[in-house]
Image (tube, rainbow, N blue to C red; front, side, top):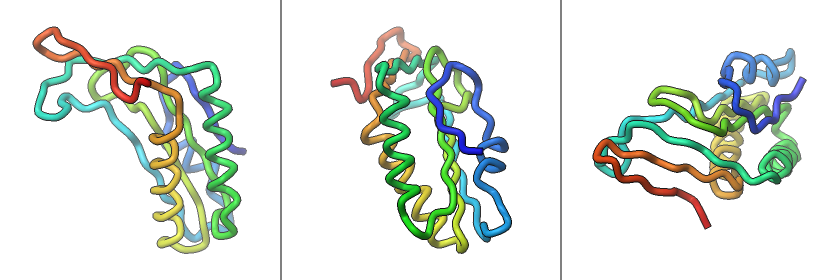
Length: 137
C-alpha cells in the first residue's frame, strides 16, 4: 500500500512507515514537518496551508521520480492543507531501501523536492497580529 495525499485530515507517521516497510527493507527513514511557534525570530500563533488543485498530481510526480531510484523500495508522503495549530504535523514522508544511507538520502531528496515543487502556500499569523504568505508566487 502506498500513501500519497494532500488532505485536511491529521497525518499519521506510523501509517506512512508501515506503508513502505517490507521484508526487503533493511531501512525505513521517515520525516515529520511540524508547525513550530516561531519563524525567523517572530512568534507564530497559527497558520493555514492552501493548495492548488494540482498539488496532489505534483506530489505523485515527485513520488514517481524518487521511486524510480533503483535503491528505493517504497515511498509514502502526505501534506496537510487547511488551518493548523502549533504542534500539528504538516508533512509526513517515509522511504524504504535495503540500507540506511540510501534511505536517508532518498527521504531527504523527497522532502526537498516536495518543498521546492508542491504548489502549497503557507499563510502565517504572528503573535503581533501581522501575517505573511510563504512560498506564494
